[in-house]
Image 1 (tube, rainbow, N blue to C red):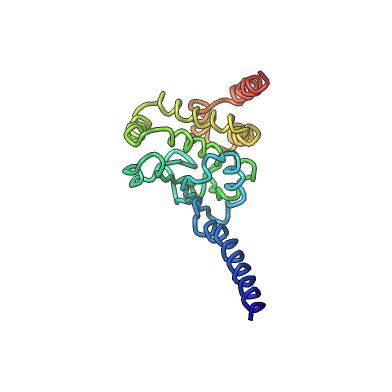
Image 2: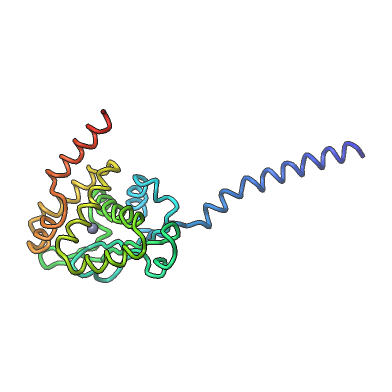
Length: 215
Ligand SMILES: [Zn+2]
């Protein structure tokens, strides 16, 4: 009888341990902070790995038929603006196709590192947004549409975050992909030159970042 109780206790303990060990797995499975289409999962996870701060920030990567004037766009979810900074969620919209020399190409098929750099830039926007109050973000959205200098400020901030997170190799590949692609429209290239950091400025940022690290 005594032996039975001891054995039962042992089994109880084993069952308890097995059940407890499944709790974190179950939580990970159901948490789903990041919603990513399968076709860009590898690239998005790679870009996210440079931003450990965004581990618990809900972000949905979502394909869209067409985005005005750009290929990707990071935004806070409108209703989540009613919540506090900490509970806000974001979406990164990705245009399904982009045009090169009159032909349409699928965004999911652009070279892997270029896509990682592109997504890394968008996550830089999320980093910028999460430091702002909701009121500030609404004001930010208005100014982004109205002022050229504000677009420049926001785009350069996103690039700067990505470089601070050591993503310069990818960011430079993305930049070179756009600027050296003879078939991309000149209007789009001019836009990139006007608003974003140039490859030289990125190299300078990297030098400054590494100098700060060493001293
Ligand atoms: Zn941007």
